[in-house]
Length: 364
Image 1 (cartoon, rainbow, N blue to C red):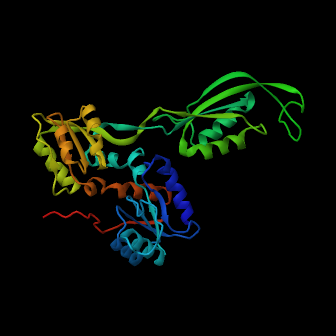
Image 2 (image 1 turned 60 degrees about the vertical axis):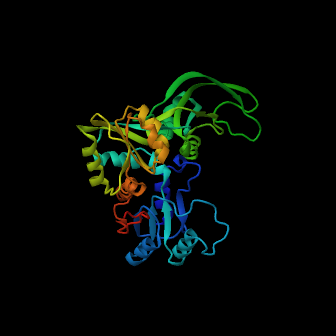
Image 3 (image 1 turned 90 degrees about the vertical axis):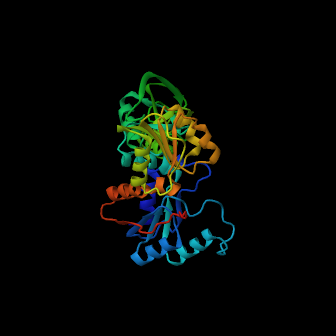
């Protein structure tokens, strides 16, 4: 298949609009029109990973961490990123990354951590905000269901774990067709009144183009009227981090031992052990120290993440067990998410996991 088909699917399944402003998720290297037959999935793109992809005959590397974060004004091989870009181009290997958008998408990185710990009663720790739009349009009564179905098929109407959500109210619309028009109903130059339905629904901002195209193509009017409003609503199904409960409460040392075993964390940094068992757990893959206050507010007994700063440990103050298992260790299972998405959509497309440990941190 063409690279653009794979990219289009990933951009939709892990929406680029979900990424943070500093991020650079998406296609990093490669022509969208080229044919690809196999992919290598990894956490980081390194020279060893590029060699592995070339040796295995993989056309594309799909990573969690982007190869390029900031703008590149010259491509001379001066930096590590530039050298890797040059090598990828020379070996004709495409690179695609899904970073913070994979963190916040439903069933993303933190949710996969919760899977590994067997947590139940799970919720998003910090729900996604400012990514929703309200769509309002006006349709002749007999065509309302057709338009409604079209925008739903384009992805509109999802609220949490419910879909096909809308509100319809009857009314009367008016318009006057001008010269050069071909009105669906009414006459040119004359006021026309039509029994219409006001159709309201919601959509994620990354679906705006797709939903509006579906609306226009399905609407009987030559120039359908519609409004888009930004919403501040939270999306309870997507966001940073998650919380859940262990099936059985554990004391602090037992909990730390399980973290070490499951995540392969050889150097866990943690706050003082609490004087109570651990039952409710908050998680955030990657550098989640900034969410410590949210983890405490959630009522969690322990918070598991990476890259916690020294002074952040003081915030625990006996309220929570802060555990820093390492950035790499907390995100190492992100490759499984990408593998599952791709193989389910393209079952005949060859996908393999990288065997390179790209963790730059070593322990003495």
